[in-house]
Length: 174
Image: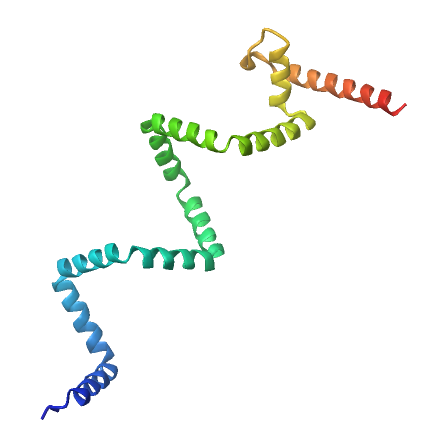
């Protein structure tokens, strides 16, 4: 005979659920499958009503698991490299104007930072006499195009610059 006292009945239900976990899980799964639309609607409503809670949880989770997330992303990228490259290429082709506008907007808002990084990169490029830097010097001082410059000419120009730098250093040290 069922108890009339609701507190005793609630405790009895709780104990039954603990004792019959598999049965409860089975019934819950069966009910969820039978009422999928209602469950999905409830989930969507809950998500839209609790965006702040979800965002806070995701932010906290991402902060705690940075290394794990980075490793998973790296593995995913390695496994799907070609597909992702194709996807990015297609997006770039379909959204040229949007990308161009966003790039211009980013450049305007971060001009000083970009110039600082560019100058730092350029100094390293210049110091190491990279092919691109040497090519730029050749193009600047001649009527040749970048595509027309052979590797041998780049090597000769690099040697010339190294000699000039060496002579300059010797003069400055005397």
